[in-house]
Length: 243
Image 1 (cartoon, rainbow, N blue to C red):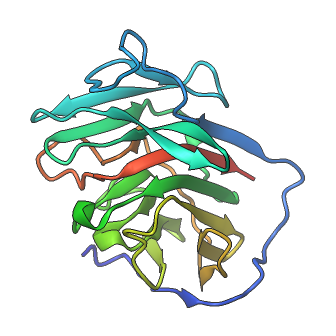
Image 2: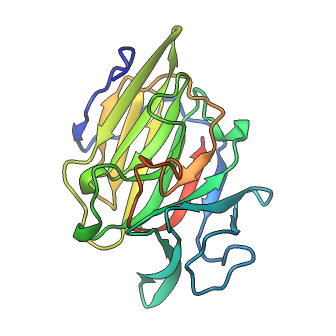
């Protein structure tokens, strides 16, 4: 572990989030997963093509695969209807990649990242990155939502007073086998939280830091490399918002 990282595990607390209130907020990413990637058939087994971003039309999340990985279409029940979603592979590697742009770096501002996920017990792995910008050993910063061993957690890292610091907040239990769940990570001033569904958030403090890097945003894994922390479940409604 990087010796500059100060990683703190959160415990569940029904604590209202505190911190500075921003007058406006801006949604930077919104991937509903409703569309079919460009140039692909709707049935799935996608190995290329890009999904549009509802928040910023010039953005797109493009499919990248390796080792016979692909992305397939699935559905999420939403009341009496269903919503299109996507499923990552049980074998091989697949990731959606959104190119870097500075507006995807929160800096010192409040931000929220969320995803609706489904993970079966048979899909649990030791590393399962759902959405992130920057890697664990990135020397300048990271934000990430993950489901390692089926347990949701959120991690941030950034610069404070010339040093790289990190913070982790963790849900107290696995959500594998519990159906579709909304997982939300949020920083509000000095408070960093994770919430699953409508449950009381788990929170930690000391979240003030400058988070910025030149990495892309990736959904489903950190890359298509061999040790890519592949998420092998399903995902819908991935969003990132500053403010």
